[in-house]
Image (cartoon, rainbow, N blue to C red):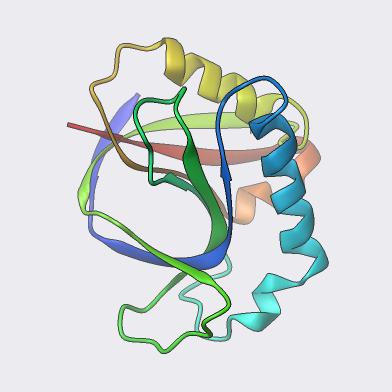
Length: 152
């Protein structure tokens, strides 16, 4: 696993409150992705820094088993005015461990990568973790993403 220090990021998108309990996250997060695509969120955010999509896990109430918020959206400049119907979060500057997920991103590739993270003995911050869906994720049936896990 690679480790990298990242600067603060501002992300704007849509949210759901969920947790990694049977029947919750595995339903809530795909439903959020469905809403993200159906509502064409990309077209509603004109001030994006790039077309990379961020899936952020934040507002943890504890570790990965406690409730948390998932936000799917885009990185935007810090000083941009945004519509009030979106969730705005700040990913803090921090050290991040980077895990790659490869394969069918719509099936188990991302979940398998998270399972590896949960089993690993990382000293996590539980401030914000995120996935970046860039050019290599354009074909989600055979894609690659980076997962950034906040560490102390």
